[in-house]
Length: 466
Image (tube, rainbow, N blue to C red; front, side, top):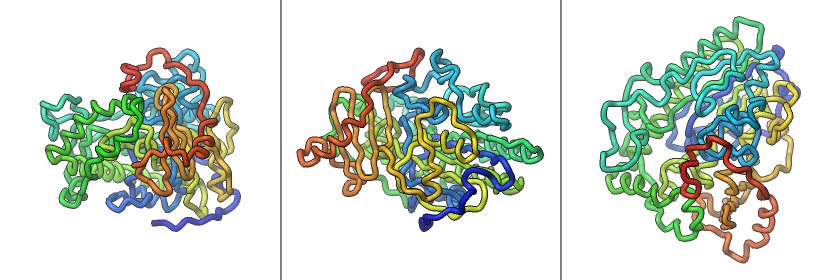
């Protein structure tokens, strides 16, 4: 694991060594913190790890919503979900009349002279034509699918998307095609004098967790030990919190995995998909090196939200707990730098203003994040707790030590990460923590916008159909 350093070479965070810095913007769907550069002992992610060796590693980065659509809308517009009403998978911000003139992150760079190209999943539902000069699409996205599900039984009432297993060869997958397209973008852009902003979105490890067999072989099933049953962790979770995430309905999937002894193979599939995506990322990084543009390119890599993978007997995202909200975040500045690991909690909403500062661009009006460039330079900063949102009036605040959750009905959760990193004990009802609660309560937003017109896909018991 890389040793943190606190000094950076001055002057290399705002300008590339060859002029206006390029940007390579890499999004990975459902990537949690089970990666090598964040210390996971089981991960096999050599390409992300080598990028981490050249980057500032944000060890405590958090999404602004634990579900694809609102997370991506938030980080790409620089606005919080409770201010836009974008809580659900749909709509995209551009389809909301009040937001249609918002300047997105890649659009801002495009307006400032950058060639903007995209392939794969960057926006959730469809690409934004205002953001890109060139769009190569989703390359098949989450498919193709086998004729029959591999691990799911017909008795389990869930969508076939929740299947997993070894399927296809590398060249047949969407993520391989995405990587090849991105490599072509880099090769083309390197032959021009125009700076580029290339957005690359990988689909795995999002379900269905299919990957070629060789990536499963990297993670032998006999070496995988799932977390034990965590039913006891239910006792101090507020009733509204359980309703919000459809907790009891989601236990059908949990029971299926545990009673059929399939939890280990589920985790094997997740790790295999991460390793395969890491391989695809490596191809893109190799193309950047080969192009001669690596020293003049800012590289950003992030997961759009985490996943539970068995924590609290849940297996996917859509919670306000640590497992669903914490994400990997790497930022490699242009130029040669002495790098560090940042422990301060930060948000994906901070990416937009950070890239503006690193590239020397003025920020457009309306951004709600705070640039991370100062932290990247090793400056000490006092920052507010990171805010995550899941539906109107449901908020989580993450400080250096604490996670505080306040639900729409006023119920609360409080976890001490110094002593309880797995969030097993809710301290909100403990009178000894009254002063901590008094510190967080005034920082909870006082107002949430209603669901934007056309909202669908939140999948919450508290907001069905929204």
